[in-house]
Length: 285
Image (tube, rainbow, N blue to C red; front, top):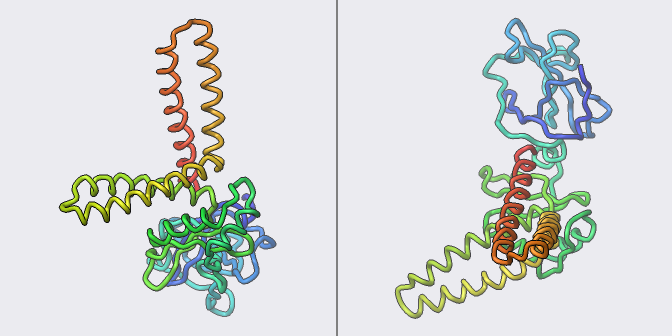
């Protein structure tokens, strides 16, 4: 059976008698288990569809391993019997770092504009942010009940609505933040334009028009920022290649109208292809 490094990849979140951990059906290289995390192994009984016991070490009838910050009370320091209802999957996946941020003794430090700007200069392959750009990103995150935090040089996003009285942290990147905020800005712009067009009186029109204009100002800043993300650069490279190919065709055939139509269609298709690849990568996380 394969032995895995638990610091790599994502693992299924599980609940065992009210305690949360992350699960793998493979054997764990114990040297990769971080400090403050306990690694237990699960044994299945006659029915191998669920674990019958949690133990320090399982040699036969191995069901999998579970990593937990909680220390479980084992009978005679050896095992804990489990019933079918004692073990369940939550449906979430977590990296070991995310698990520790959510269930360990440490959590990310909330970031403000200056801190996010400073962190952006350390994060590889992400755009460096001015404090103004960082402030816009943080503002949109807060407006959608998220906050950004940092721990040991890594960026995390905290979901303030995941559970009452708690924050759900996930590994994040500045590129993720920019792309998400650009989407939110687009949705808000569309809604704000509709509200301006349907204002019931002049005072309401003025107020809603001011809000629309503030979103349009944000849009210009975010568009320029998106162009500096990895996805933005990829789209630019694709567009440049498509333009060069069509210009070459134009020079050969001289059909300007048809070539421009092909250019616009190809740029739109290339954006969809890259975005679909990004979505598949995000789902795989």
